Image (cartoon, rainbow, N blue to C red; front, side, top):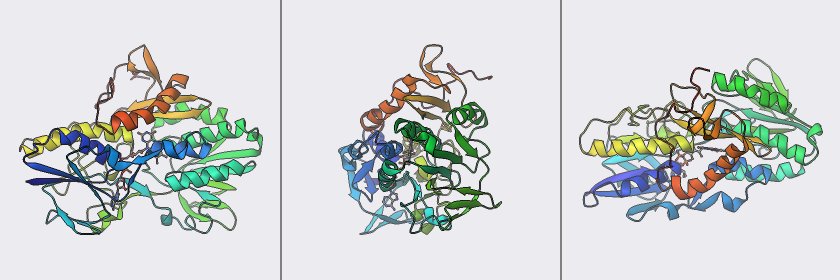
Length: 411
Ligand SMILES: Cc1cc2nc3c(=O)[nH]c(=O)nc-3n(C[C@H](O)[C@H](O)[C@H](O)COP(=O)(O)OP(=O)(O)OC[C@H]3O[C@@H](n4cnc5c(N)ncnc54)[C@H](O)[C@@H]3O)c2cc1C
């Protein structure tokens, strides 16, 4: 028997287990999946926890529930990958593989910036990219009625690059609802030259920040957090004062990649952007946030990647050439507050544009335009995540490769 080992049972690993269990010949292949935690978190829900929109139970479930019968679930920490010997060292024992899928995701590394991970961590300096961080921030926001709120991105890439912008929009709505918006000053600080990673979207979304009276500080390459004086300071000595700093720290792949000599500077694994095969080892494939491919780090992207990767795994084991198919397709809702959201749909080549999705003219979702329907789409994504996406079931009308139907490509 041969072994296919999936490292990580988050969004990508769980989808791959579900895709492959019915497709790999059972008499030839054993499938194993390894994760350190019992709990599977719905990370997009971390955006809503701080504003009391979601409760704890809406964003977490027992991970093993989503692993199909026929796949061996191993709850252990992965220590090292020995790619020369096709072996993974776990905290207790080892496992050998014929084929390896790395799906270990990315996580925050606040220790990378001087002063960020200090005694002020989760007192006046918060993240919302972890379950614990989002809950601590929820408790802080419940009592925060006055002062300077700074929403900050340390450096790119980060998972769900629109999440900090959404946080700023939701904060505006949250403080308005509490009747204290005039006493809370909101500033959005980014290392980019605009509010969003893509130029056209940045220009289109600028009005939202202006309308909501959210100040924008761009090109801010943070050097340190000065916790004595409540300031963030960048390499050009620009200073931004805060009473409450909500930061997205540096995002990095797991340390396993560094220990195994498989990662880049940020511990992301060099990966072919279209086949998802590791650039260093042909029997290793990489998916989701763990890759270094220039696509957004998002669950929707992992979902599209999983479809291509499933086909490529089958081609690989049948000694056939891989498909260079994955096009960087991303499909993300951007919550703008007061029950409205935008939708963007783009890929490696095509920036987000206006139009309708998935059908030309009729939508029903609008691209790059606020609508209540988009907001319901965003909220429906949680149900889709637990019931469709994780199980590897195709989402109707949402194709793995970006479609130009309904898009105003020349605007
Ligand atoms: C605040 C926030 C909002 C978001 N909003 C959206 C959104 O609206 N839409 C969207 O599409 N995406 C969104 N995302 C991004 C999405 O959640 C991720 O892109 C997605 O979960 C990536 O899946 P993954 O499997 O690659 O990584 P993960 O789901 O993070 O899974 C990685 C798994 O690997 C395991 N692992 C790692 N290292 C080890 C080790 N050494 N030993 C054992 N196990 C290990 C981890 O425990 C984890 O379970 C958001 C993320 C955040 C944080």
